[in-house]
Image 1 (cartoon, rainbow, N blue to C red):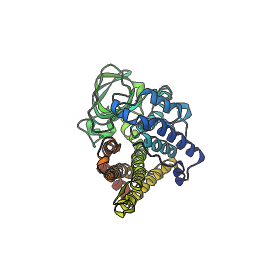
Image 2: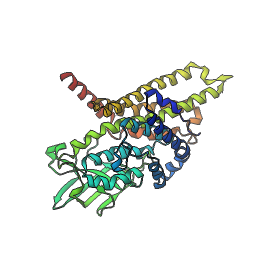
Image 3: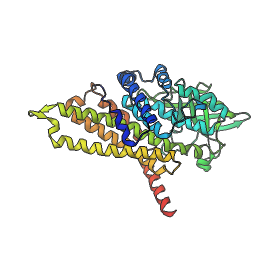
Image 4: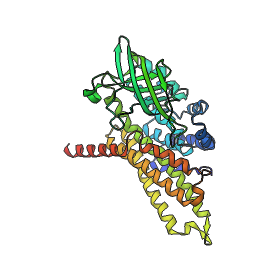
Length: 393
């Protein structure tokens, strides 16, 4: 089954500008003509090829919110959401290219020296290079500030020793934003610094996991054995990396929400079409409320979650608080997407259980983002903290 793409004018429900609608049309055309036909091949090959990344870059679909000085287009964050949502309609995994470029690119643009940002970011926006985010460690998990990877200052270099794990695109990326401990463990987050590291530096070894889903993205470990990183690659102040950089996750969490919801929306569109055509007992399945009511509920929940994601991005553009809303996007949208894909699979009966249809891959893929970038439990802690803070203000 080929993907059923949603009408372009559906985007106008959010009051998008003509420029934003143009971005959606370009991204959706690319998703329909290039990404969707190749998605099963990328799944089997286990990577996003350079040629495909460069096509995205040529269309201006990577790091769109970054400044023109750094190779981006300088558009707002809502437009970033429009792009990732449209790309994910064609291939959930390829949307990671935009996600990592937006998250890590923004970190570099804000905290690297202008010279370093100008050296690295144009290649990211063109699709030539990828930046991974290297935060998680084997013993840390959700306790992201409990880092042990050590960075020791040696003159004009820092020497890194330790391991990062569960890193998306660990074996495909050319760079990584690496968090390392420059202070003591008792300092927790305030003893952590961030570095932009070339992943072909001597002393780095990368592995790849055998994962359930997201095969075209891939996940693995990065080992650092006396890796020398120039002090000029420090992002922000020493000991301030974690505190400064974590602020960018509010942006990426809304993007992740839209990425996952795109999969749910495509599944729903395909399933509505299927139940209106498939007949049982002499009439279409869609004549049965037992079929249409669950789909109607899914439509309602998905549309509400989508609005929340766009509201969060609009708040970021308005420089308004949005940490609470971003956490809502992150825990709810991936869980909801998984539930919707599951229901759509069941609606297709025995055919839905086959690998001939895309539901099983979509189910595996969206499951990963119930874990990555913060679990539901951590997101709910953030929501509770921010809500209580507002009450005491």
